[in-house]
Amino acid sequence: MRIASFNINGIKARVGALTDWLDESQPDVVLLQEIKSVDDGFPSELFEDRGYNVATHGQKGFNGVAILSKLPLEDVTRGLPGDDSDEQARWIEATVVGDHSAVRLCGLYLPNGNPVPGPKYDYKLAWMQRLEARAKALLEAEMPALMAGDYNVIPQPEDAAKPESWTEDALYLPQTRAAFRRILNLGFTEAFRARTNGPGHYSFWDYQAGAWNRNNGIRIDHFLLSPACADMMTDCQIDRDVRGREKPSDHVPVWVELVA
Image (cartoon, rainbow, N blue to C red; front, top):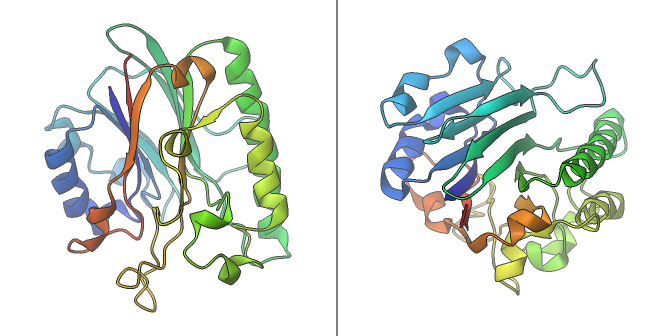
């Protein structure tokens, strides 16, 4: 089972880039972020025609997450628990059943948090506390589970081409990285780093200042796997070349292969 995560940066602007990649890569499941569309405006038929079931949690003009799955989606829930007043569309969950096991999929778009200091950073840290609580609950359920998406977290210096440029940024502040490590230390596996070490591996390149051409990137799109899910993993890769295509997102897909 191939499960991908892709911050598409606006479904209407990038639908061609997304469908081209889907047709080429044929993932079984895709967790999308930043669809920037209300549910009714999401072009579900384009994906249903390709054999995908579609679940969305949209918001006008901002945020928004979705799941595309060739397998039936069961027990779909929307919104990260812990704050009923939070109206930002950043979290969606569903269960898929493979040949051997069911997997709980959680797609997320973690807040950026800039500028720092300020209410946006306070919201980011509070959201990460809620994420930690949900992560604990997933482990307690003892079902294979993963949490994947745009975390807006640069975990380590090697995850940025120029880490010195990010020292005052919400994506790289010590409090941000510590909150990410607390979740990992519950018992999750960071899929890409379980397979690949060293610098030079990025999932985001800004549109400004020739970042792509100079490979001035950062790695902020992550898969965190529960122990039972990590045991199923056979591979995790970044589809880097997608960034160089026509009308690309500033992110590229990341995917894991599970024997599920």
